[in-house]
Image (cartoon, rainbow, N blue to C red):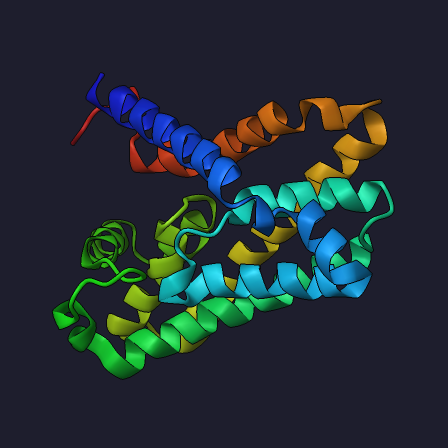
Length: 227
């Protein structure tokens, strides 16, 4: 029961955060980016957001999951190039995690002594560290589907001096599953459901929650007895 409550609480947190992002950060939506920056400018902005959320402190609040899914949907309408979108998102997600690892590896424990600021909250780093200590190398894959944790997980891996070739392997797998999976889902939705744009908000929220469930079930193994 406790594990179920924890999963439910996290899902509700995702829902609340997503609704706040939709309300306060419309300028980061793919449609707005394309309208403001043009076809290729929109691609570059999306890649930059994915890079920032994957490994920079300032990226923890960015809407990575919904961005990928919605961008895939826009690609199905011809507003973005699906091949360039997916390849670019994958590359920048992997580079972002590698930069996060380098930051953690370079600055190490000094990050825990850093004062809180508008874009840095020590509690997020502590949470990611606890997550990493519990789940080890798999954190790099699972964290891709968990907002906030995915930004700080590579930093913590760097602090923990995780063997970089091992980190890179998990980084590549996690980045592939996250970027290809959510973007293709959005693309297929746009191609298969007429007038899907009318239901984009609830569908996007559902996809975010569903994509997080496997990681959450691994973290909180409901129904499994503790040894």
